[in-house]
Length: 232
Image (cartoon, rainbow, N blue to C red):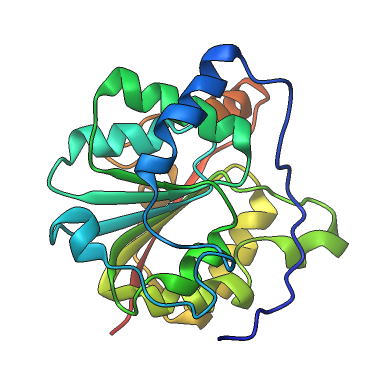
C-alpha cells in the first residue's frame, strides 16, 4: 500500500441546492463515466488506470477543473477519435456537465468528480496527449498564490503524465496568474510556443467561450490564451 500524502484542499465542493434533474444525472450517469479506481479508498496501491481499456487505444486528453463542462463537451463532440478525462471537485459543476453530456450524446468522456491530484496519481506516465487548464481559481491574494495550480505540486506530476511534445493550454483573465504561469510552467519541462502577441491574445481555433470567460469579459478583464509544449 502506498502511503497517502497529506493534501489540503481549498476550493468549493458544493454550492446551491441541486435541481432534481441534476440529482438524477448524478445518480444515473456518474458511475458509468468513471475512468476507473481513482480514490485512495478504491485504489490504495495507486495502480495506474488502464486507458486502453477505457478508450480503446484512442489518444487521451485531460481537462483540469472543467467548471460547468462547456469546453469539455465541445471538445468531445469535435474530436470523437479522442478520449477525454475531466476532473472537477465542485459537485454542482459535475451535475451541470452530466446534463450537457446527455444533451450532446457524446460517449468519449470520463469524469472524476474530485481533486485532480488524485487522478494524476493514477494516470500512467507519458499517457496524455493534451491537457487544459481553463480559468482556474485565481487565488488573488499574495499569501494564497501557493494554492494555484501553476505550482510545482501540480505541474511536476502533470509533466510526468504528458507525452513528449504534448500540448498544455492555459486560459486566464488574471494578469498575475499569467505571470506565475509563464514563470513556473517552463520550469516543469514545458516551452511556451508564442511568437507574436496574437498567439496569446487570440483564442485557439477550436475554442468555445465558457461561462467563466463571458463573466470576465462582462467585467472588463482580458483573456489570455497560453500554449505550451512538453519538452522531450
